[in-house]
Image (cartoon, rainbow, N blue to C red; front, side, top):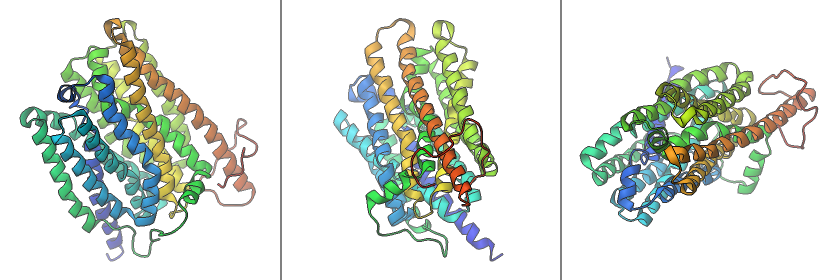
Amino acid sequence: MAADRPERRAWWIWGAAVVAYLAAVFHRGSLGVAGTQALDRFDVGPAALSAFTVLQVGIYAGMQIPTGLLVDRYGSRRVITTAVVLLGTGQVLFAVADTYTAGLVARAVLGLGDALMWVSILRLVASHFSARRYALVATVSSALGALGGVAATFPLAMALRNLGWTATFLLVGALTLGYAAVTSTVVRDVAPGGAQPRRGGAVFQQVRDAWSVPGTRLAFWTHFCTMFASGALTLLWGFPYLVNGLGVPASTASVLLSLLIIGQVVGGPVVGALIGSRPEWRMWIVLGYLAVNALSWVVLLGWPQGRPPVAVIAAAFLVFALGGPVSSVAFALVRDYNSVQQVGTATGVANAGGHSATALGVLCVGLVLDVAQGMPGGSEYRVAMLALVALLLFGASRTVVWWRRARAEVFAAEARGEGVPVVLTRHRWDLSTPRQPVAA
């Protein structure tokens, strides 16, 4: 019984942190169903509206490496608590903002809080759970956090209709601020006897050390190309694309958007269990997913008259939703190829990939829409979504490059008699030697 206490304690700590992450995902997606009201409230057009999301996600992406450094140095408890305070403050500011500039400031504060959360959760998981359990607990964390995205659809839309903009966002902001008391008292950085957060070390050297690992670079590009489609659709462009581009009724569009979240909730534990038990399958799963993702875009954008049946749209959106669970392969790669003391920094590097792609995708779609306005029959959305396809192809090409290089490093380590995290089977298309002298 006594042996079970540390494990129960780890699950309690993890649970308190995951609730904070759920709140972060809710706040991140809160503009999705409020986009139409935001257009009227701030009197802006589509490109200016996309700036809210681009700013928020851009801050998120830009803060991932600094967040990893902060977590490695100060621990998850302090960073998570700070994140909760910033999230609540940002949403309160957004509630009372009545000018475009004030709205941008509010979303910037919110984006900063959101940026501090996920890397802190993964650092916490790495500290309290074994490497074998890491992939499963990480994907379950992501799946539970996705429930915050569900709350940011139907429930938030209902609250906005019944309570109005100011009261709704003030309420959720105040509740979030109150939860900081929970994270500061329940969350603990490490299990008894675990490695404490390091307090020193050159910042740039820490980043260089993490980036020099081929597995970290592979993780960056894996994350880059797997999750951004669902991110861009959930955060901003999914609803307008469905309603204005595909002619879907607004009520049906809300249901279809929820599939992006439901797919993550259901798919997360399944993918996590699979990659945890069969780590040699990880990159094959990623490449297979990217192929199906690209095929889904071909079907959606190439359908005659541009209006596919709802069932086809739903299937495609479920495919996009699985990008979140599949992107967790990136964090498993980071965990396997970096020390626990460095895993926060390396996770920040990898996590920057997908969110950089999301910000870039949201921005590109908005810019193309501005240029293509006036095209007949919703064709401007078909053209704009090609920006996401181009981003997918670019990310996939870089993922293949670094997959081959990372595999070459593993084979080189095996040849030297060193231990490797995953035993791989050599193929004819593998590189014979590593392309550059980086540490495995």
